[in-house]
Amino acid sequence: MSEISPKVLDVRPILRSGGEPFQAIMQAVQDLRPGQGLTLLATFRPQPLFRVMEGRGFDHEAREIDGGDWEVLFTPRKETAPVETSVDADRPETWPDPSEHLDLTDLDPPEPMVRILAAAEALEPGEVLFAVLAREPLFLFPELTKRGHQWAGNFDEAGSAYRILVRIGEA
Amino acid sequence: MPGATLSRWTMSYFAAACLMLVAAQGLMVAGYGYPFADRGAPETLVVVHLVAIGWLSLLMAGALLQFVPVLIARPVIGGRFAVPALLLLLGGLGLLLGGFVALSGALDPPFVLLPVGGVMLLAGFGLFAGILVVTLYSARPLPLPARFVATGLAALVGATLIGSAFTVALSGLAEGPLLDRLVADGVALHAALGLGGWLSATAIGVSYRLFSMFLLAPEVERSTSRAALWGASLAVGLVAAAAIFVLSGFFGAELLFAAALLFTLLAVFFYGADVLNIYRGRKRKQAELNIRASFAALGLFALSILFLNVPALRTGDIVAAVVYLFVFGWLTGLGLAQLYKIVAFLTWLEAYGPVLGRAPVPRVQDLVNERHADILFRLYYGAVVVATLSLVAGTNGLFRMAVAGQLFVTLCLIREFIRARRLSIVPAALRAPAGMVRPHLFLPLSAFQGDK
Image (tube, rainbow over the protein chains, first blue to last red):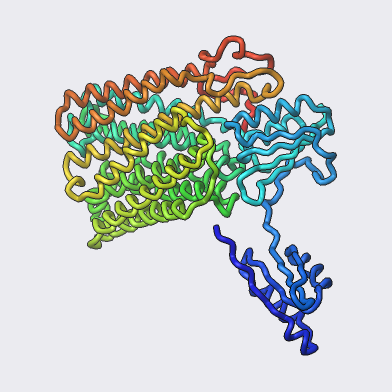
């Protein structure tokens, strides 16, 4: 898919005439197409705007151009797939760092399932395992739950790899 | 919570389906039904429904109960109704066949068997469709493969309703111009909804997922896939509209039917392009047997739909031969090829799932003998092509021999399925690690670990 080119908004004339460009900027943001970025041209580094745009899901990249003016490119953060978790997986963000990393993207199903379960057997309760797979391991989820492990996983931005964290349960 | 577990009764559906396929082919070898009787003769109806309901529909129903959760990443809702649905379908089919035998005059059971069988089939298919509709509804928005299944379910309802109306008319329970028109002009529509809409649309949907799974290809929703879905759904809609035209005596049902065939051809074209793309994007170098054998089925699918779009081939004995190719080349070929893989995989998961990672276990491939089955599938497709050609040529003796070949392969494959279920090909050292579960042949284990 080709990237949509960012919309360009030059607020330097407004600033130079002593006006307040905030409304024009917000209007431009509202008119962006899904996934489209915004290039803003201003006479100074618009620091306060970065916070506002961050809240709206945009990253920024600012650089000084000729004459002390600034060009800022706001790009929308890619939406990641929602994280799926086992029922008992409370707050996976508080789990310890994984002590085991597995790249299983090139394995035939159901081999990734076998590898993850084998790796889980070797870990101590409370330890965490991280694995990347080519697809969602649907038959693995119930087996992990049955063995008392907790898990959380989702697809990456491109939807081509599934990432899963498994926290080993008390045996 | 997302995830898929083993479907409790899928193996029972599969076992019943395989028996029906043996019975149907056995009857043809024995010279029962077309081409030894008229195309519309009750004997032919026995064979046709044994294949369409007994074999293909039970196979597809069992497969969907297992694979719809894989398509939507959610468990089936109402899985406990799978057994009553199976019993209703088997009972309804038995009565329906009894009714056809009565029509043929061979035996003298009451004609009322037909409508009672029709009602039971309506209830059985209704119950089954209900399980899946509720399950699919819970998972909206549906991914593309699941939307093919939804289209197929709509066609199933249509085919079953028309079929039930036939049973009422044929038994003489009720009569009227409406039913007369439907019996005269509705047979092709009934068959198209059943074999095309229900069995083919669902097969296409599930195969999108299975092909990319087994070929290790990325799953992308292509615009061609959406076009295929639209083509298939429009075709089903047009056939349903044609049925309403026939009922109300409007002129133009034939035109709608021809348009539906054209949309089907387009859908098959886009589907074929997608499968080719999936194949090209694969990470696995060598496709497994189940995929190779499915590709042969796909080729025959395209060929038979192409033939059906030629008006001159839509008449007389030629159309019977084309439908034979469609049913045994495409639907049955694909069914047997996928069954070969699915039985091994489900058995592996059932037997070794509890000990995975704790003890060395065999691979799924160790449950089957692929070299053996490779020869069987070659033989099978060869026999189907010979049987089809002999129908065209009217050489009935050759037809019987070819169907006997198909029957032989079917029996050999069933033997392979049983050997997979019994784990008898698995190397002895790996066969029974402590904690493994020995599966029953076709009934679920009492302490079953899958879905309820």
